[in-house]
Structures are given as structure tokens and as C-alpha cells.
Length: 369
Ligand code: TRP
Image 1 (cartoon, rainbow, N blue to C red):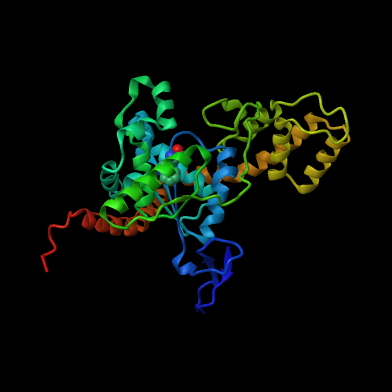
Image 2: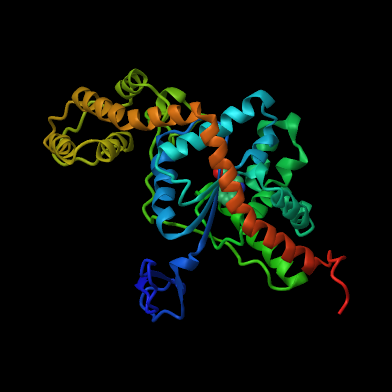
């Protein structure tokens, strides 16, 4: 993927991205880091971040910020579909921003902003609504889920959720969108809306693709062994970045285990594998190796493993939690970060809107030639 740039660039890093993206073929052209590929991703503002988010998404964002032109935003407009209490909104947004920065996202390197600070997004959303059909929106599985789970609030915002998401992405004319499996269909719809716009008005939007930054995305299971770690399922089996040391210890000590292997080198059940994965991610390599050998030799003591994991996990989360708390208490700083992020994001966003308006024919003040 990465090739040394042939163009000598003074005081610029000499790494370029092979835009063809194929491995063995000679690159067709280079995009230099001065002109990095655009990545957009939205962060939900509901709920607290947990280990699954940290290892599955945020860590990848942190790596991407080095090589891509990243736009990461808090999807606060999207959260309105479920009618959150107005007095909670700001705290939710500030907390998510603080937790992401505490996890390593650097607002100097990426544009980190609130969706609602970019008025060009709802403007593009309106334009794209004309490219979206009621029938296809009604068929989206995430919409159908909501119809089932919140039948009293099937609002048009829920129906057009994928259109707003398309606007988030297309407003920056992004090519890469790091999202989980559950969002892939939304991204496909974004491509469809972009394509329809391009067909009708002329080539304008690139078609954004799912970005698998890391082929082996780390998936953390819930500590009760039921499904993936999640903010809405069993909170006692989910470790949040805001959990204090004792809460972390309690949760880990209650994690599901079994009677242990009965033959050497036995295959691990997934919930045991999960504990080993957590050990691997947060403990010293020697610690992991020791327990791994104990498992293979059938003399593993899960109580000891959990005690060690609890201490290592607490030590791992402590600095993130403390930094997030510090940041959250510094509202002036969060406001400054959001403002600067919005400024960066609006540069591209206003250019996109100007171009889209012109193509659509909303161009009333340019005199005829
Ligand atoms: N829908 C995404 C989620 O639920 C969040 C999101 C909103 C998003 N807009 C986006 C993700 C644009 C990627 C790009 O996780």
C-alpha cells in the first residue's frame, strides 16, 4: 500500500499512498501525504465508551490519524432520533469527545467536531433526500429494528437516518469510511445516493468505500460470554473506560469461566479465549505466556488469571479514565477543540455545498456570461 514517493518533497514526509490500492501492480499514480485520502467516521454520542469500542474502533482511528486526512465527528443530530433529554445532550457530546482524546485521538492531527456545528451537513442531507426513495429506506434492517423496538416513535428522522449518514460522508467527499458490519448497508446506500446525484447532475461525489484499516479487527466479547461487548446489553459484563478500579475488578472476577481443560492443548471455549485476548491486550507478554502454558498443561487456575487480569486492566484503564475526567472538567478546552474541528471541517464542507448548489442549478447570483 505504501510506496516511497518519487517526487522529492522538502520538509514533508516521503511517504505516499499508492492510490491504485493493488499490491503487485505498479502504481498508476501517487497521492502524497500533502494530499492524503479522506476518511470520515461518526461516533455515536449515546452511552459510554467501553473496551469493545476502544480495541475495535478507537485504536484504529488513532493509527489512521497518522496517514489519512481524518474527519471524526460526534453524531449528535443522529442521536435526536431517539429524543434524548435536552439537558443530557451537551454532557454526552463532551464526554465522548473527552474519552476519544483520552484514548489517543489527537485533535491537532484530525478534525474532531460535532455534526451539529456543520450547517452544510443538513443542507446536503436535504439535497440527498431527493435521491432517496421511501421504499428502500423502509427496507433498511436498522430501521425495521427500530420500528419493532420503538413503535411509538417511528419518526422520519429514523427513516432517513442513512441519508443523514450519507451527507456526513459526502460533505467531505470522503473515499474511506471505517465502520463495523452493522453499518455497511448504510454505506452502500451512501454510494447509491452519490451515484444518483452524479448521474443526474454530473460527476461530483466519489463513492465512499468501507475501510478495513485492520483486517483482523479485534472483537471483544461480553464477560458473560453472550455476544459482543456492548453498552446496552449486560452492563455488568461490559468494561467501560469510565469504570473505577474496583468496578473493573468486580466485573472481571465475575467473568464466565468453566471447570478448565481436561486434556493438554485443548481448544478454548470462546469466553475463555476472550479472557486470554484481554490478557494479551493489557498484560505483559510473559504473563500471557505463563497462563497460556498453564492452560495447555491443564493446570490453569482461572481465579489467579482473573486476579492478574483485573489488576492489569485497572492499570490500563486508569490513565484513560483520569485523562478523560480531566478533559471533561475543562469545558473551555473541549469547546476550543470542537470549534477548531468545525472550522477544519467547514472548509471542505462549504466547497462541497457550493459545488452541489451550482450543479443543481441553485446559482442565482452569477451573472450570465
Ligand atoms: N451510524 C453510525 C453508527 O451508528 C454513526 C455514524 C453517523 C457514521 N454518521 C456516520 C459512521 C458517517 C460513519 C460515517 O455507528
